[in-house]
Image (cartoon, rainbow, N blue to C red; front, side, top):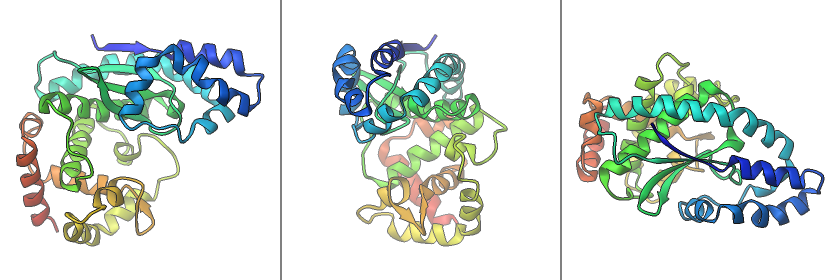
Amino acid sequence: MPRIVDILPSFEEYARKTFVDSPMVRESRWKDLYESANPEIFEAFYAGQGDTVGKSAVVRELTIVRDRVSEGGPVLHRVIEEVEPAVRDVLGLAPTPDPLHVLMVGPYSVNVLVGSMGDEVAVFHCLEWFQSEAGSRVLVAHEDAHAWHRIVLGAVPPESDAVWTTFSEGLATLVSRQVVADRPEEDYFWFGHEGFEDWLPWCVEHRAELVARFRDELDAEGTADTFFGSGLVEKRWRVGYYLADLVVGAMERTLPELVALTVDEARDAVREALANLT
């Protein structure tokens, strides 16, 4: 049974005490009433690069967020319990050590964060982003794959490395495809969020140009952010995820074989596969 720590009740307690307050007052009371009730969780969350950038939006949209938490909390419990064993099985891994799952409301900075709680790998699920059960299944499978992958590596993977990010994201996407099959193709990249219906058709149409540009810029500074982060490629976000799916899929290895690769082996495999893509 997956291990789940649920701090959503303490968020609801904060919301009950502040719902009549102005957004400014709600924000001023957030740390004392909510974060201070869960200090270890938030220390680990912020250490893992979660930030406070969207806290004002959470407190301003408190009613909307409470509705999402009320609906999404039970859904995430069920989805994690059902999806995690399937992720572990397709990767061919032993049941332990296993990741810790935290259900929380964050400050709109990230929908899911894979980080650490002490010596354990932890997955922080931020319910202010909840959309639907179907999308959450794909998202949980994707992020749970990252968590198990980190456990196998035994270390925090390299950051700001476009080559490694390609492998990591491509592997997680392949896992989500196998564990949560038969979803609309865009769900494996956008997890049920609306407004991106033209994103995948555009990527497919511009495949050759994207592959060529990515190959040329692979080792340039900032490539990881441009293709996978907040940067834009031809006014499109996150096109690196489309490319990562192509690259890792072209390796024609099983999921247990892929997750067992060392960082250096994975980076070499990305370069080889990308060189052969057209």
